Length: 64
Image (cartoon, rainbow, N blue to C red; front, side):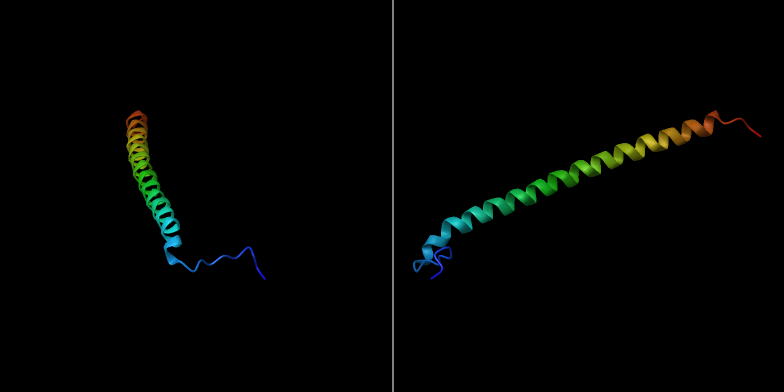
């Protein structure tokens, strides 16, 4: 009736799919962690440069 839907009688055929899914989920979590750490590093560098620029501008302004 519907040949594109296949549900195996032997449930052990689901094991390779579960393993693949687990590997990809773990990979996605690791990738998100790496992106998060890199983003935090860039944020710290930006904050450092921003504060340096502000302090330089404060020192270069003439006294009124």
